Image (tube, rainbow, N blue to C red; front, side):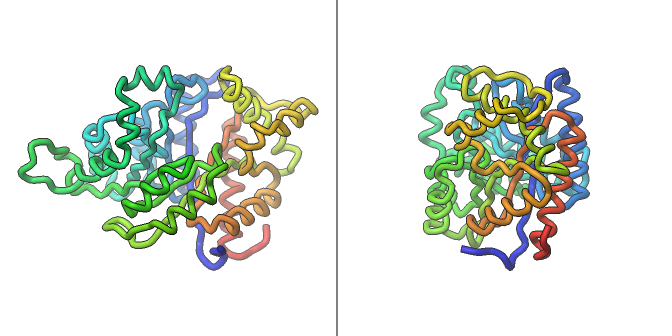
Length: 340
């Protein structure tokens, strides 16, 4: 497959990563600063992901953060990447996003996933009947969407959501959600930035089974990538040591704040070569603008996605802003058919 002739949308997935020594308030301020810069660089949307009981990630209340980001920007779409629906009541989700959609018309996205966004013990503390909701995920997605319709005469309504335009996206990291997105005729976002194993199989299922809906007449796909861009490959590798330490913490259940970058020593080379780390970082594009251009263009050609959504864990805010600025230039050159 190829989509060389079409314009590829590019967006940001922010986890509100907490750097060592930074407060939660400072972390939220940095997210808003990033969103404002992204708005001026042509990024289409700024999504926030739901996570719990992880001190290195502050996006545990994405609906609140979405209001913070949307209120501080003017035109960039803001949404959830995603709300982990089995953690919540469909009615409450509809009310929250209906409210956001009225406050910020035509700018709010509702991405829905079914993973817990945390460990199993924390998931049980969030909602004791969560596993029952996991099995009902397709029905609960449909329930959320139903609350956005005009439901005169029904006993239970989300009046603040009725008639509000908030498009729904299905998120997934395996093939299960591909069936759901296709059957409901919704756009599909795959978490290839940390779980790439089933990317191509899931995309094939989604395209094969897609049924047009009121929201979408043909398939629309988004895929996640990690990007750390800098002036040189060497500097980007140095910046990536913060991300490597975070991944090690996830794999060893020893999660810590995002640490300052260090020299890219043999220790980090060996860590990056670990099979578990390589699986998670299969679509981590680390390097100079030219290196990132090559890897991103290849990824787009191989997947034929309509949109790439970028995540990054970079310790210094200025380095993160620069990385996203360089990536915007990468995407503009790819869309214009110009070599980096």
